[in-house]
Length: 119
Image (cartoon, rainbow, N blue to C red; front, side):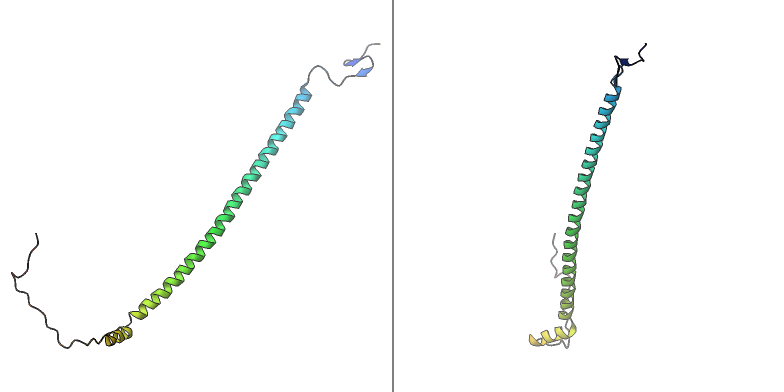
């Protein structure tokens, strides 16, 4: 009786002449490992960038609070300056310094030739 192709002494062989099945499996495993490591790397990069964005957001909020405080302080100082420059305050300061109002203004007349010219 003739034995079918690939059969030896009553046992079927799994391997017939080439190891392409084994090399395909090792290629698939290597590809899966590479894809896994790429996904892990992308996840780490994403988490690092998200962490940086959150940190910058906290920094931005702190700076915005400082700006708001400075604006409020600036507004208070502007109001104080306007009050100190008001006419009633200036009149009160003039009276406390014993300053009097001018009745008549006398201007000095400058004759030509009395001025020194710088060169």
